[in-house]
Length: 417
Image (cartoon, rainbow, N blue to C red; front, side):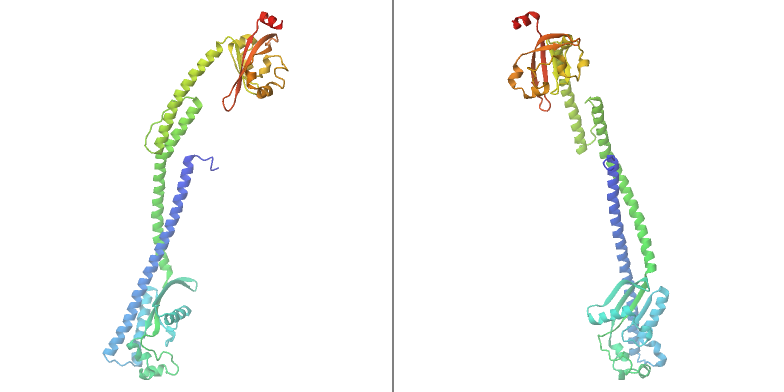
């Protein structure tokens, strides 16, 4: 089926397939690029929120210390980490995010880490160079973006999380040192992390919208490219080749080599057209010479005084000159393709193994001899004649010519005597 298609169809199909492959690759790359940008944007947002939460906690801690404000049960909401968590909850409600502080040694059940956060917190403690972690994951089958940034103990944290005996009395009452694990931290230790969870549904909508725009733009670009390339190929390659094929077909059908094509370019197609035109001119000249040579040959054959018969190795006659027509009573049309042995009485001495076999096995000296034959005319009358057979070797398919001259009765009689 592919071999039967026209060149234009093949070029269009191949061009479409190549462009389609590049289109798919381009769209895949753009999708990955959009997703990477989305991921980078999500990290930037998470870093900003984390920084604000951390700065809020640190600012409150410094202000409480600078103002010598003593924390008590009534001022529980002013504890830096508690205030930071509550501010994060308010911001999360506006953004549909989840923003909170979490720790493996939590006091407030609201700060208890989930299974994912537990693993990350342990990594923060074990891998000292790991400061943050961000990735796409799932919660209850829903895609989310999660970001955790490690929080480290500083001097302001020790008031509530350092030596339990130095912590505010109301904290000791709420969180007894013998039961609470959030005491005895040291400066620089990992106290927990700021955890941000962003639902992917809004981000995926944003990604889909961006990808849809890229899809339409890229598809339109590639379609335009296909059309432009198709038109250029048609004008520069397919149309000249079509014209060349039509010219060759005309030459084949008419036998005339006078068709000249216009040369519209100097590239390979133009060189091919020039070569075709030059070949046509050369063949025209050679054909003219050949026709003239053939005309002279036929004139020579037709005006010969002897009968001349040309035949193939199997014996089929393909030339029968005018003198042969007079001698045998046949027309050339009647004998065209007929066996040569129609023209003589079979002679076992002359052709002992039959015409074809005898000619094939004959030596060169045999072809130089004059042979006597008994000719047989169309009306079945017989006559004596001399015959010389010559082999014409054309390289691919040799043939034979027989020159036949009728003997006069006197010559025939004297030879018999």
